[in-house]
Every structure is written in structure tokens, then in C-alpha cells.
Image (cartoon, rainbow, N blue to C red; front, top):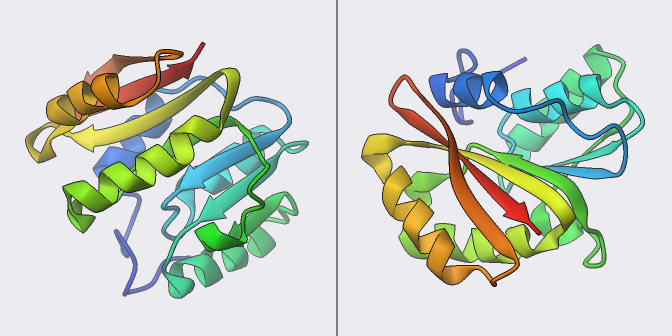
Amino acid sequence: MTASGVFSPDRIDTGTSVLLANVPPAPPGGNLLDLGCGWGPIAVSMALESPRATVWAIDVNERALDLVRRNAVSLGLQNITACTPDEVPKDIEFMTIRSNPPIRVGKNELHQLLLQWLPRLSEGSDAWLVVQRNLGSDSLQRWLEGSLPNDFSISRAATNKGYRVLKVRRK
């Protein structure tokens, strides 16, 4: 279920499709995060792959969160928690983070968002971000390399249809 007023209201957007096609299966358990979930294609995908995991689908758009909840109910998924970022307990670490991040919020806000959530990866876990090449994927990769602590590595995992899939690994 999609609706106007959320990102890509008509279908799964190309970037999210590229991300979903270029990531390994989600970890079988633990806490998984869809950062900027929109109506929930990434969260739903992880919840279906990992029924024993808790999938946190976070967004600032209440309409998007309502759609994620409705999509979870329609698919019989009870392992998705759709909420605002402030509702996620501060002590939770994530086995994976997957995101088609909200690039258009502006560089400063995007950087702040990534610095808030990427350090919450568990040791040995990966985040997967999809960013359109002409919207700054290469500069974002360089920024991540220079801004995250030394126990993180950043690499380009895939390139397809003008998008880059960045892998952020916590060593």
C-alpha cells in the first residue's frame, strides 16, 4: 500500500530496487533498521526474510509510518516496529541498517542523520545505503570515510542504473 505524501508513492523507486537486488539476505535475528522507511519496501523485505528479527522502520513522516504498519498487517508481519527516530530505545544496536537515505533533506541534515545511526551498528555488522550517482554518492562515500571512526570501512558494493550501493562495515 502506498499513498501520496510519501517518497515514491506509485511504486518501488529505482534506487530501492537496486538496493534490494544488491544486498545479502538480512541477518536471521536481532534488531534490523530501515532508516527513512517511507511506505516500507525495505522494512517489509527484511521482515519477510528474517521472521525472528525485529525490524525497526523509522521515518519522520507519520503518514509513511501508518502505511508501513498497514503493509505489515496486510502481510501478517508482526516483527516490524514502525516509529519515529525518537521512539527507538537509545541502547539498541543493529545487526544491519539498510536505507535509501533522504538525500534531498540537505547535506548537513543527512550527515547528522548518518552520524546518529551508523555508529549503532553492532560489531561485525554492515549498513547498506543506495545513493544516486548524480546526487552525490561518490562525495558521500568520501565524507563517510573521513567522518566515521576508524573501526568502520566504506566500500562501493554495486553500481547499477545510475545508483551506487555503499557498504558501511563496522569491524
